[in-house]
Length: 116
Figure 1: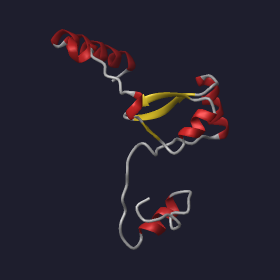
Figure 2 (figure 1 turned 120 degrees about the horizontal axis):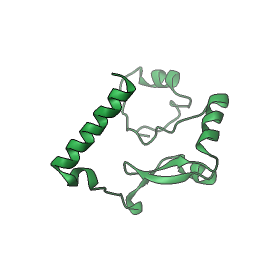
Figure 3 (figure 1 turned 60 degrees about the vertical axis):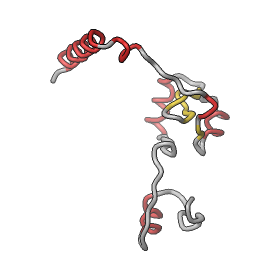
């Protein structure tokens, strides 16, 4: 499907949704800030000027002091990290889970207390 055809399909779906049930398209729900969780990098994000917004029950950075283009160029020239700590909880069991995680992650997994 070409770009123009995809755009037309999106327009058609939007029109049909708004014709069938206006509440589906127009209703928006926002989380209260009081119940939002913070990732382990929250303080780092705030200290570096991130604009924090609610996202799926978490306080997440959407943009820093610089422009989006500056961030993109920095990422391409120097690399970047993406904070995935809000995405899922994971439990691994078995005799080889710690050696496996030690190869996969940048951290001292063997030094963590059980359940952390």
